[in-house]
Each structure stands twice: as C-alpha cells, then as structure tokens.
Length: 379
Image 1 (tube, rainbow, N blue to C red):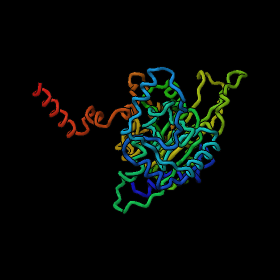
Image 2: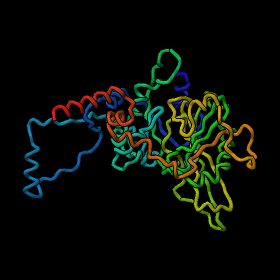
Image 3: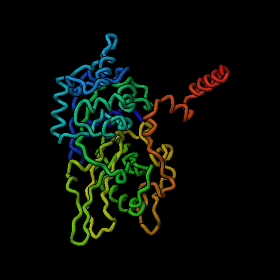
Image 4: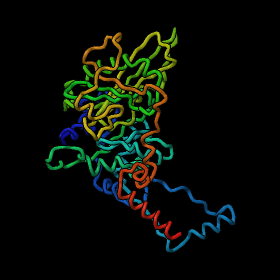
C-alpha cells in the first residue's frame, strides 16, 4: 500500500466520481485552529455547548449549602475556544442535510467513541456533538497523526488538507452490510461486516447477495476508481411484495438508505428483509465508502495474508449453485456459536487496561507485576 493509494481514498477524492451512487454529503475544510483544538490533550471541554439555565434561588437549604461549597476562589473554570464562523457553516450544512448527520474526517469516522455521546450514537445535530465524538476518538487522532502508518513507500508525507465530512443521517440495519475487497480491478472477497452476530437471512440468501454485489461492481465500480486495488461498501434497498401488499418503510428515502459508518475502502450492501417470504423483489444498491487495500482496513472474516496471496479464496458455494469460476469468496457468520462481543467495547476502557488484558504491551505487564509484588511486600 502506497501513500498515493491512501490519498485516493479520501472522501473528497472519490465522492465527485460516485456522487449519484452514494449518500448526499457536505465537505467543509477544517480550519487549523479547529484541528489544534481537536488534538489538544487535557480535560475535555466541548466547544459550542450551551450551558444549562441557572435558577436565581435554590430549592432547599441542602442545595444552598452545596452551591456555597462549590463557590471556591481557587476553583479554575475551564472554557473551550469558540469558532463562530466555522460553527455557522457547520450548522447550515447540518440543516441542509435534514438536521441530523453522520460526521467523519478524510477517512475515518469516530466509531470507537459512540459510547460517550448522550444518545450512544454517531448521530449529530450540532457542532458540539461532533466535537465530543472527535475529541474522544482514537480513529480520528490516527487520521490526524498517522494517516500513512502502513504505507510501504519512503517518499515524504504529502501535505494534508483536512476536511469535515457531514453525511445525511439514516438508521442502519447491521445485518445488511457487506465489505468487498478488490485487487487488480477484480472483486476477490465479500465479508459480512457485522461479523460478531449471526443473521439467518444472510446464510439463506448469500448467492443472491453475492450476485447483486458482482453486478453492481461490474457496472459502476470496475475500472472507474482511481486505483485497481480497493475495498468498498454497498447498500441495497429492497422493496418486497407479499400478495397484494407492498411492505416498504416510509423513511427509507433515497438519501436516508445508507450505512452511516464508512472509513475503509469498502462497499456496504444494505438488505431490508421482512419475514423472508418474498413473492417479488426489487432492489437498489448504494455505494457507501472506499478505503485502502491494506492492513489499515479491517479484513473482517478474511486475513490479509489470504487477500494478498488470493489463496483459499474460492467461491464458497455448492456445485448446484452454478457460480462462475471467478466468483469472489463470500464469508458470513454461519452459526450463533461464533457470536462475539462488539470489537469497539475495548475503547470504553483506558488503553493501559486493554494492553494489560491482551498482553500487547509487555512493559506495562512487567510494571504491573512489580507493583503487585511491592504491595505484597508492604503487607
């Protein structure tokens, strides 16, 4: 993976080419002072958040005593910087996208920080909501500080112009997302994105899913992207007919039927199933995002060794399915036995705790053991 490939996967690099196939979005240049604020370490004070209204009189003696206790001359008041011009631009963009957005930087979204939001979601309505997620996200920090960490070329890092990307918000069905891997303009692998869960409909209809993704790839993606190696997301909107009744959610409009997480060179296939008893089927596929073909991207149910060497990547279908010889490998979670916890749960804990539990940092483990030994000696 080269730095040029990473640059080609910036949102602003591919969005103009595939605008008609993806979710409506607004791209805003990120001012340097905003970037400095987002990278500033220390106590988290969110800029742009309104203070709650204050009451003129306390409701009880206990509350009055508490207020007097907190009124200390030595108490420092932390205030966040304000960005009035940028705040206005962001709010105008949010309003133009329906009032709720999914935010990201050039490549990454703050998926690891959703737990800190008041709604436990990446759905943002104000700049302060975005700041809270961005300042709490390791993924965003990596975009700022190490965007070319896995690149193999020794050329100087290009000068980056960072952008705030606002994508119109929509609700997402995790069991309908798929990530696709493309090497040398050939679709070689498709993986269920939410691999921690088992979805019965994926196992039952994987041939149809795979066929739909291949058709979309050949028609809209192949030979059109800036690189011949890539990974991408698709989303398919399905209308289903049972007898004479069409079952179709009214909020699944064009710009709302999208996967709201996208930070890797991938496609997300969105499937809306109701009852799985289909008499007629009409589908639509949407492109969500791209990211580089390399270790910076999660390979999900594949390994990068498999994807790079293309070993063990035969189509996972029976002979009776009559799949083409060059059919991509399709992988999904096949039973509830393999269900796993969310890979983002570890981001709720301090990094030192995670390193100790996984053994990734031997020095921290040694320090911890020394501390325990000293405590035992003191006792």
